[in-house]
Image (cartoon, rainbow, N blue to C red; front, side, top):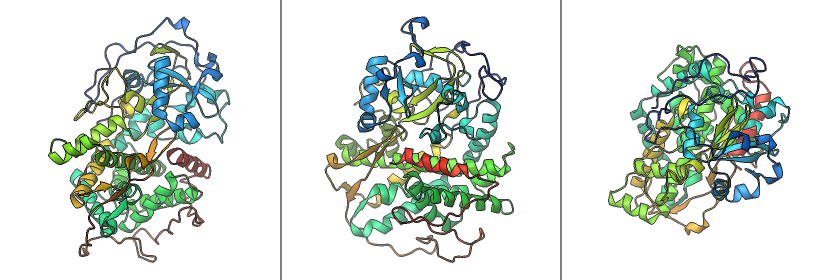
Length: 527
């Protein structure tokens, strides 16, 4: 597990901080002296400020650029071919390109590998606090803006800097570090076998909906300390929530209600789980902070790991060179994951960072309050670091898929373990797994944040059902099964059927406005 970076920025509020009064705009913040750290697990070169292609005075600010001349990161062109759009922008602007996000609001898209690392690793210059965004301060972002689910500030470590970030992030990282890696693999092996047991006798399956979308959440519910019978229902709730269906609000209520019960129970019945470790951490998290961070961990880990599993299986089944190496023993599943994390990161971009003062990046003039979008997919194919995209990258983990710096993904090792073990077990149980349709028939959905494989139909030699094991969990929670966590939660009914009556959390834990925030968030991940 990656140890979190320590912010080297002073604890005094930087200029322009919206929570400490109006700072003086237009203050230049110089580059830190010396090379930036590459960070644990990173093998790439130290990031330095990308060279300017001209003096700052020759570069217009973001607000001075004509909107009619900028490309949108949403709409038909962006969703049809996001990679093609990134390359057009790279050819026109270089490492940093001006773009339009929803509402035709301007932002900077970071395309260069080095420039992305610079932004990720210098929070004193590029803050995670979205309240700095000049568009917010000028009232240009309405409460109903589709951007709000992604960039609206929340009291979470992902929106914090400095001491508050260290407090919250430290608790999350320590909690995840306390997870038994062998236990993770045992859970993955168990649930993979159970999922294969369900579709194995048919000799065919669709692996996105029948495997990839189930495995991560089944495992994560065990790691956070959920009771056994909650697992299948939380899987359905998470799938419904992240697909942005008409029942997404009810599904979010289901997740929150389950987590509320979990936090309440762990006060008197602690265990060796993430929830207990967060509650007992020296950082002193409130119950609300524990619940919100558990929800972020569950949903973020689920969505990214689903994509990682699906994309890796797709590569194994469609790339002849890859398949030959894998079966011949020259390439391992971890090698496959590394290649996919370079070529198809689970998140294409991350929004965002906000400039704390005027600075220069990639030859562009960045003003205080500008929004910057981390282009993970674009940075991973930067010609400077990958002049030959066909060259294998086995063992090279200097990709941007898990980020870098203080906000580097704290659960990347767990996500990799789930994907690696799950795929390895699946290939062991179904050794003649093969694609059931021509590769060109595979379809994708794209949004500005990520790209998703819609379906991965496969066929294989039918596998007979194995004798039931006494230790196996039920396929679905019994309607009236007793539980130490109280009466079972109502089942989740996914669209197009009417959603269940919302099981609302305590108003003290989750206020009414957050329902809309999470419901809209779902639509950006799955359309």
